[in-house]
Image (cartoon, one colour):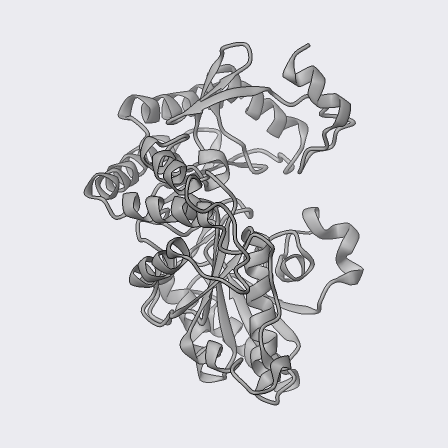
Length: 421
C-alpha cells in the first residue's frame, strides 16, 4: 500500500479540505533543491518548503553539526539550565540583528514567536503601571494561527470561525507613499481615543497576502510615530528573516528599528522546529522586579532545544559565508531579469521582486484555494516544479543553493504554464 493510501486512514493535514482534496503526495527523499516522491518523480522545491530550507534539504554541513550535538546533549529544561548552543546562538544572533536588539527568548514556531511578542508588549506596559490592550496591525497581514497571532492577522480566510473570540485590533492600510499622511491621521485618531500597546507588521513584504511589497521609507513613517508615542513595534520576520530580502533581516533596511522581532522558519534551516522573539534591553528591564508576578511567565517545553540551537548556529554560519551571500545576489539579479521578460505577458498584471522572492500576479479571479489555483499547482507539479500559488499570485522563494539550471527551469515552467492558461 502506498504512502498516499496509508495517509488517508489517520492523518489530518493543515490548510486542506479533505472532502475535496483527499490525496497527499508521498515524499521519500529530499536533497538540495530536489524532492523525490514514492514513485521516483523529482520536483524542484521552488518555495524552500514554506521558506525554511534556505540552504537546501539535508544540507551536509548542518546535518553533521546537529549529529555531533545529538551525541552530547539532546534536550534540557531551559527554565533552570543553560547550555553552550543556546548561549552561542544568542551571541551570534545579536551580531546580525538590528543593533537595538539585546535579548533572546526561545519559542517553538512562528505563531508562538508572535504570541510571545504580543504578550511582551502587553505586560511591558502593565508592569509600568499602564493598561494598554489594543494593537494596530496592517490590513491583510498574517502572523500565525494561535489566538493572539490570529487576532493581529487580517486574512479572514484563516480566522473566520474564531473572530468572535479574538482580541480587538485596529487595522490600517499598508503605506504606499500616497496614503502615508492619511494613515498617520488615522493612527492619531485611534491613539486619541484608546491606549495602544503595540503595532505589529511584516517588514517590506506581506507573505501570505501574496508577497506584497512596500517601501522601507513609507513603513518608517508609521514606525517613527509609534516610537514617539511609546507604542511598541513588533516586526514579524518569520518569513523575511535570514537573507530573504537581500539583507540578513528586512528590519535592517528600515531606519526606525523594531522593539521586538519574531523569528522562525529559516532560523533552523528547516531541519527542526524552533523560534525566537528578540527584544531591546529596555523591554527586558521592565520585567525585572522583586515582585515575581512581573516576570515573563511564558514557556515552551522545548525552549532552546540544544539540537535546534545547533542547527540555527550552522545556518547562521552558512548565511554569513561568501558563497551564500553571492548566491543571494545572483538569484536576486536573475529574478529582476526574468521579471522584465514576463511583465508584459498577456496573462500577467504585475511582477515584483525583492531579494530571492519573486511574485507574479495573474489576470484571473482565482480564489486562494479554488479550482484554478489547484489547476496551476498540478500544472507545475506535472513539470517537476513545486510552486504553491496564493490565489492569483505565483511566487518563487528558492533555496540559496539552487543551481542556474534549476532556476532557469522554474522560469521556463512558469512561462509555459502561463501560455497554457
